[in-house]
Amino acid sequence: MLDNSTSMHTSTNPDCDTLFRIRVFLATQAPGLEAAAQLLGGQRWSGRVRQLCADVSDGSLPSRACLRELKALLGLLRLESVHDLTSEEAACFAMIEPTDPRIFEICLITDRLAQFLDEYQARPPADASQT
Image: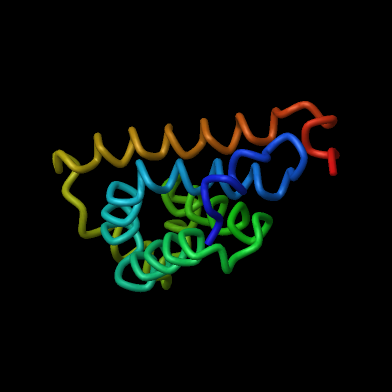
């Protein structure tokens, strides 16, 4: 687990900076992400979000792997797999009522995750290449 003193050295360690940003994002968004993952992807996706949060919290997952997981989660939230009618995601999506108030919350959390990933990817190359 990264302590606060390690997290403060973001200008000299881009991987630490990325993990810090992911940790802060997940600390504020994890409950919504997990609920959305459960609704749209079932127990497997809910567990995947819980595992991601645990791995980020204890520092055991490299930042690239974290980002890869967040991008996969964004794909779930954006319903990228519902066209495959044999997928668990399609089955979960089919069970959601169009008037379910959780849909609005899923849209909000999807926007937050997309914005987080967009902001991370828009960082100047010099920030990402510092050692």
